[in-house]
Image 1 (cartoon, helix red, strand yellow):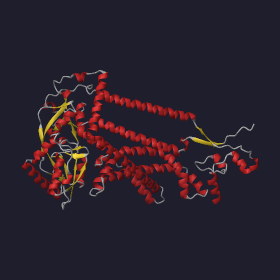
Image 2 (cartoon, helix red, strand yellow):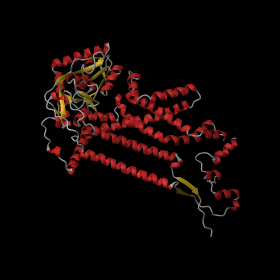
Image 3 (cartoon, one colour):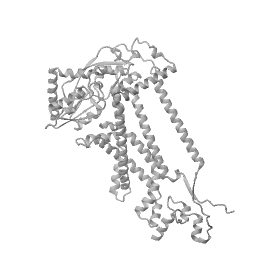
Image 4 (tube, helix red, strand yellow):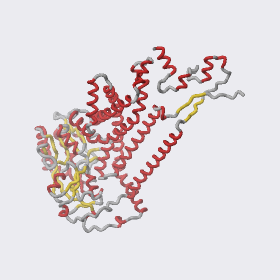
Amino acid sequence: MRGVGNRARRFGAGLPGMNTAEAAVPNNRDGIPGTRVDMIAAIDPAGAPEKQRVPEEQVSTREGGKEMERKKAVRRAEMVLMFIGIIAVLLGLLLGGDSTGGPQKPSISDVGDLDEATFAVVVASSYEKMVPILFPKAKMNVVTGWDEECLQVIQGKSDAVLWESSSLNEALEAYPQIMALGDPIGKLTFGWAARKTPEGQALCEEINAFVRTLRETGELDEIYKRWEDPEKAPDHVDFDLAPESGKGKLRFASCLDWQPICYENNGNACGYMIELIARFCASAGYTPVPEYVDIQSMLAGLGTGKYDLLCYGFDHWSESEDEAWFTDAMMEDDVYVLIAKDRYAGTVPTASQTKTGLAERLAEGIKTISERFEKNFIRENRWQMILRGLRTTLLLSICSVAFGTLLGGLICLMHRSSSPILEAIARIYVRLIQGTPIVLLLLILYYVVFGKSSVSAFWVCVLGFTLDFAAYAGEIFRSGIGAVPSGQTKAAVALGFGRFEAFTQVVFPQMVIHCLPVYIGQVISTVKLTSVAGYISVQDLTRVTDMIRARTYEAFFPLIFTALVYFCIAWMLMLCLRALERRVDPTKRKRIVRGVKMRDQG
């Protein structure tokens, strides 16, 4: 059988990827598969005419010309439709939408008209508890961001929103379509929250003593007024003031979406409360270890012990004292009701509101887009945040796909193992991961499994996406192997191949052909899934976009830009993987016929 195997490998009899004509003809002296003339010369050298053989030419032929033409037509139609879609989006941005075309809603003259109104509130915020107290019959639309609250009011999906005085001017400047309705309707006091442990209670008492000292000396008001004035506000907070000491590290979390209290500026954490925590750490001798996440992640981290302190605006309405210790109030804010200007009783449409000329709307749209682009990406060098987020997204995607592919191969081998224990482990793993949403998987890994470890959030994300990708990749590989007839493996073994050689040289090339289309889709899905990495404080592309939105109060312009970036990443990735697919699949690449050209002997 060894001799048969050698002959099979030489002539390629019946093996994938070997041309039938090449299998029937021995190689010439140059090692190139022989031609018919070479075969004659090999049998009877004297019978071969002189100079009859000429250098070979590669003649490109296309099988299935109609199919190739159809594919070209589909690609052309795809490009045309994509171009039309981009133009439609640009025209929509330039011309803008008309939010007044819906049914006319009753006008609002004072707070008394809002008894049965619909309020937009941010999830887990103080207003989620405040609205039912002030307006018992009102309804609530719960959103995830402050900019979405204003957009709900502008589009008429909600009637009003509650807003604190500390950031009122920024909101009215960002959204000129809204207005404050009358005088403040209440007050909120804000402090910090610590874990419900004896250590947390002691930390709150220590913070309270520090804040009382600042208040008695008048320094607390000076710090607040400095941050309240945009011209006097510093561009960063110096955390290097905190020395190393026996008290160790203070792990705290904050959310940079509240100017001038906690916000981001040129990649630095800034704000009134950020300076207070830096001063406290320097005064008490703690080494600060900050993380900047959203509100839901802060609460999850405090409950699991990931954070010792939440440095944000919390009051007794937002979280019960049964769940956390609270410090004394560090600031007090008036609460206003914001409504859309066109809902206010007595509002008369202005000339700009009645402008309908297409040329004027296009000019105004171009001006608006340029202003928004400058505001969101040029001002304060925010484009650097986008680049950092893009780099994080790409690194996260590459690492997750690479490690996930290796782990998926291992899961596939366990599935095909003769050991029932290994196969059972593989099945349980796949079902468990596929049945768990990726956001919950990341939260469990970061706040529970690695809650008190020093593993960075980035590598926790890599682990989470690797586990998720491997579960699907393992099934893709298993189905690809199953698509190859088992008889080919038996035939290869019968021809003298070992089990490993049979897999790598016969089964694997065909498996790749079956797997690649589904594998490409899974890779692109994983790249898009990385947009949830911000839930555990990884500043990926989507997270930095949310930080920009919180800073500029722009609802959708940064999101549309980020969506285009993701689209470009997925498109380029798809082109690269499709090129790889054409290279490994012989039915999708150009066929090269090797032959000879005979001279006319006449």
